[in-house]
Length: 297
Image 1 (cartoon, rainbow, N blue to C red):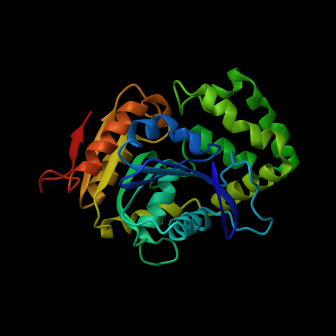
Image 2: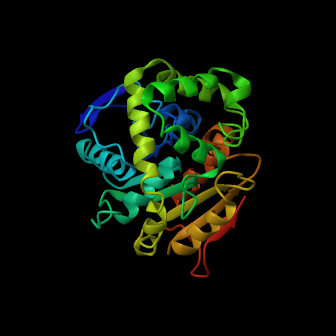
Image 3: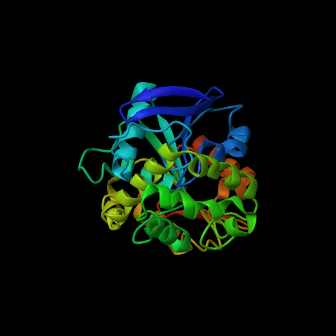
């Protein structure tokens, strides 16, 4: 893992391969390793960068005064792209990472223009519209975030146990096959008071603006670059209807539906996701015709 000092603190990131630039964003209580198997399939022909953002599984705490609202973390991603001077970026987000991608696509909520470094985006089963907090997992996390950081740490200790991690209120409806990864992601918040402080700060800021993505959606029609929407067919946390709505909103879009997966498609179907991204980045446009978004499985 490389490190980069940004305004909020030090960010760790992976940087693998050469070729067109792909940047991968993870969600709450996850880290850059979410994308490991996807990157393995793409890095022979692409430069793949995956930062570990301060969303609860990070290993380097942010500065105590850092703003950790989702708009601030989106700005941190923009700063990451600027500091590394990345151009023609395909920005890829899953879970809460997809919410960050939407913020960067629209410049919301500050009203600033979309990041000029973006050439394409991929939204993979992610928070959107009024599904924020998303599902039982998101609602439980937002409620737990009201606790003082030490009490939040005690509440999260149950995540040491696999049966607890597999509950619908935890990771049970997020991934079919990724328990080893989720157990690893939990270690920082279970063992580090400074990471618990950051995580509670993120959750409280998000809970204070649950209409953020509804407001952001209003600006998506102005995004004129190609967009790939990849959604789990039977996602219980991110409604499949939201994948279709995003594809309809974005002028140049393609919708790919993935079977046998929950929300964390990079864990459940990494080869299928890597192939969809590979096909998308190889084509000049997302949609093969003006008739509307393409749908494939």
